[in-house]
Length: 372
Image (cartoon, rainbow, N blue to C red; front, side):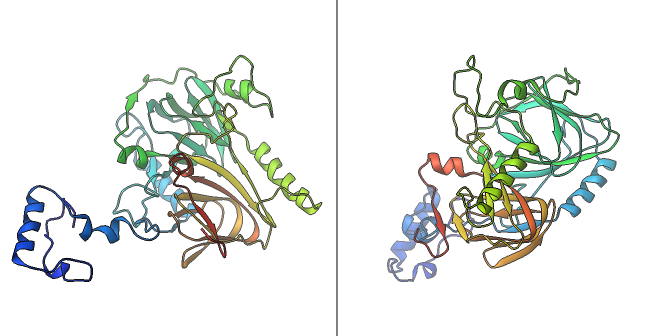
C-alpha cells in the first residue's frame, strides 16, 4: 500500500505467512495508519527490499530510422523558440508510466535542427551531452565558445553552462541528446534560466577554444591547476576515438593486452583534470566489436543507454533480443543481463549513471558464471 493509493489494506491481504492475524482491532490499527499517512514496513518489505534489483524500467529498442522520420515531420510542423526551446523528442521507457525518461535516471532524445535555424540560449543544472551519429553543419555554442558537431563526435554541456545551437548548413541535422534530467527531477535539484535572445558568437571555427587549450593527448595547461567536476573538453573528436579503438584491436592481434575481452575494444571518455568521468552523474564510453564477436553477459547496478554508431548486430537484454543497426538505441535497466553480438563489425556508444552508484558505494557488477 502507498500513501497516495486510494484502496486501503484489507485484512484479507494480510492473511499470509509472516503477517499478523486478521482481527477487527488490527483493521482499526491500519485505518489509523491511513489517516496519519503512515505505512507499516511489514506490509511492504517484499517490494521495498527485494533480494535483488527489480527496476520498473524495461529493456527497449528504438529504431533510428523511425526517430529521424518523426523528427523530420516535427521540423515541418513545430517551430524552435522560447517556450519549447528545443525540437527534442525524448525516449519514453515503457516501464516508466509514460514519463519522458529512457531509464529512471537518464534522459535520451533525438534533437533536430532545420537549415539555418537556431535553438535559443539557455542553461540548466542538469548535465548534458550530444553524440552525433550522422551529419554536420551545426555548431553548439557553450558559454560563448562555438563547437563544431560532426559525425562520431561526443560533445559536452556541463550543468549551468549557457548553450545554444545554430545550423550553418543547407541541410537539417539530427543528433542524440543525453542528460541526467530524471535524476535531477526526482531529487528536486533542478534550476533553469533563459539566456540572451541571440547567440553572441555565430562563428564556425574548426576547433573550439576549449579544444585548443585542453585537447592535446597527455597534456594539460599548467595555468589550469584546479580539478573540475565536469571535463573542460567541449568535444571529443571521432578521429581520436576511432584510432584508440583500432589500436586496441591491432595490439590484440599482436598478442598484447588492452581489450576488454577477445574481439571487444572499449574506451572511456574522461575528465583530464581528475582522470574520472566526464560529468558527475554520467559515464560515457565507446565500444567496438569485431565481426562475429559476442560479449560476456553482464549485469550492473545502474542503468545505461546504448546507441549503434556503425555496423549491424544484436542486443539481448534479459529474455529479449533485437537486431540493431546504425543509430538504433537500447535502454538497459539496472541489473538486467546484457549481451552484445556483432554480425558485421559493430561500434556502439554507451552512457550510464554509474558515477552516481560508485559515489554511493552501491555499484555492483556480475559477469555470467561469476559470483556477485
